[in-house]
Length: 169
Image (cartoon, rainbow, N blue to C red; front, top):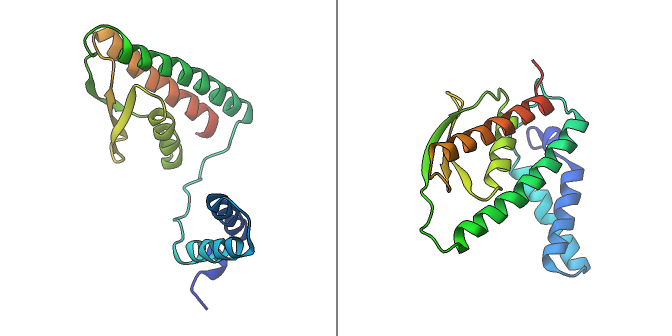
């Protein structure tokens, strides 16, 4: 038997991947279902994901809901801002590459922060220095020092909310 089979075998993941396969094929047939099941089983058994770093993490559900609602609001504002920057009758905005220190301790929470920041228009994490806990970010609108400070404060606010929501000291 394959080493670590019990640890690798995840029926729920196989079911979810099978459903995703059937949805991807756009119609339910037994051939699609069986093919999806075989592909999902092979992925789960032969390409296992590494263990998630979940030590010192517990979710504050109320904070998580507020975080997601605020993130959706920020997403809407950022989308309008980037659309305005693209359509306004002026020169393109100046951009900047910034290094921002991160206080997040857990790698999983750091990855959540990176995903949430990258999904917002107007900025992107271009490099993560895990050892020094530093992000390198590209900022779209950096015309003034106030713009740069505002973006750094946005990152620090996101980080503070994620620490409050997930991390325990």
